Length: 287
Ligand code: AMP
Image (cartoon, rainbow, N blue to C red; front, side):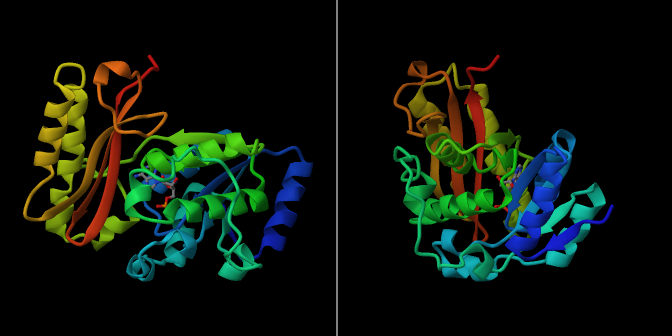
């Protein structure tokens, strides 16, 4: 099956309206490219649940608080399209900045996020979530999918987008897909290619720390859990930004494990000059 690459909003919308008029459901997976197996699990879920799957590949400049990170972001469209084709994705939408932001990037989305965007990643990456909300809102407006697929890898991101969808009553279902990991347990990320083989192997410490926290969430004190985890992530080759145990709804760091039913361990740590994030649900309301 050939994956059609489309660069303009007009061309994509013409194809999508045709499919919709035939009663077909559309699944949408927004990405910044440099696709890996983790991204493909999102596409596969969309392919299984919809008749048409659209993947967007767009490195959105407005969500980068760090110019260097934006410039270094890997761009490998040809290889990405080959991967999409290998699993049968219908469309690859790869727009220019002018297509996404025809009136410039000044216009932001007016939505109450209850401060979800201000903590954790928001604190360390000022303006990041305003950019994410801006681009996802715009892409949803362009594609108008029935279902939107996002990864649990970016816990705060999907929580914020879910809030935006609810607040603005956008007619789309958000489907959150589990974190896909390398064999070592390191969460797959487009940034992993920038790690040396040694640092890539060292990165397994993040998942190990999260697993350990999950194991002891009901038996150890919060202080003991946090101290141990932060210690585990502190080496001469790491620079720990944060390890927190948060309430999965509010994203606030908790004060007492027993006062919550949905707990998530969240981490941001630098290894070998690369900023890595990961998370794990430590306690869940769901059976
Ligand atoms: P990105 O291109 O990094 O912005 O990611 C695009 C989408 O893929 C986001 O919804 C991410 O959460 C998701 N994603 C990235 N890495 C993973 C992973 N290892 N497992 C599951 N989803 C992922």
